[in-house]
Structures are given as C-alpha cells and as structure tokens.
Amino acid sequence: MVGRVQKFTLTGDFPQSWFTLGIDNGEFREPYAIGSNTRGQVYFCDRGNHCVQWFTSDGAYLGQLGIPGTGPGQFSFPHGIAVDAAGLVHVADSANHRIQTFAPA
Image (tube, rainbow, N blue to C red):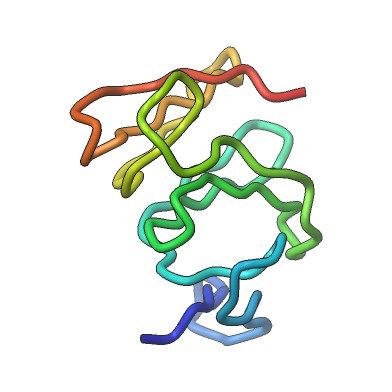
C-alpha cells in the first residue's frame, strides 16, 4: 500500500506527489476520497488513520477532522467526502453507517 496522493494537470503532466505513508499530520495510511472547497483547499478521507485531513492546493497541511472511534466527530473508515457551496464538509463514515457534517475554520 502506498500512502500518497499524486497531482496531475489537465494535460497529464505530473507536477507533484504529496504526503508519505505514516500516522502523523499530513501523512496517510490509506487515502481514499477527495473533495475541495471554493478557496482551493483539498480534503482527503484517510481510511487507514480514520480521519479527514485538509491541505492547500499545493499540499501544505491545514488540519484534521475527526479521530478513530464511534462517537460524534469520530470515524471508522471514512469512505467518501463532499464539500457543499457553503463550505460544509460531508463525510461518509462507512463502518459507523452514517454521514457526518463539519464546518471547519
């Protein structure tokens, strides 16, 4: 398993690979889904670390949503993500059988 996200241009050029395999901020164990907001921030579900991490479009780490678990704000294998026009982040928390919504700063 490779814990990285690769960025490509519309013409297929490969300008950047983000992140490394790990458990620290900005590192992934199993990146699975991607979403973005109108400010160019990018959100990734990390199924292996049971969280959502978000970054600038150039890969600078901005923060994390959630921790492993079953309670509110906790994830077990986040599987999908969508960011709506208001900037709310909706996450499919697959093993907990629910959708959670966040309003990050």
